[in-house]
Length: 98
Image (cartoon, rainbow, N blue to C red; front, top):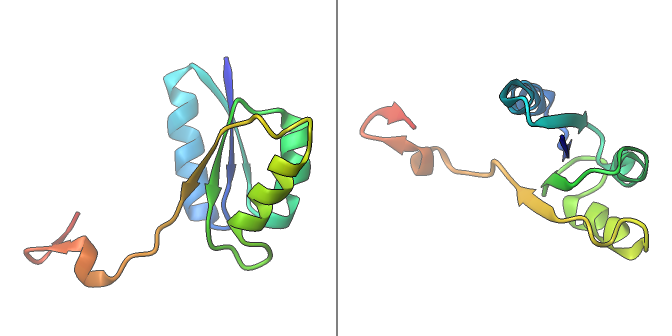
């Protein structure tokens, strides 16, 4: 089974994503809700891919990614950056939310 690590400070985001990915039956998913703990979680969990938030209060995603990519043991793990930054008018369509 493939291993996915989600690094995002919003547990309201990571929990349902983790549950949905695991429900597929092909993934083992770990969520880390503190950006600063991301690099050590990567070394410990050894994921096949990382889903990484860009804006986090304790350490921004670019710094987490830099630490991961600077480590010879983790530098080849693919990282997908995620963000939920959007203005209300960008996510509204004809009076309903997408």
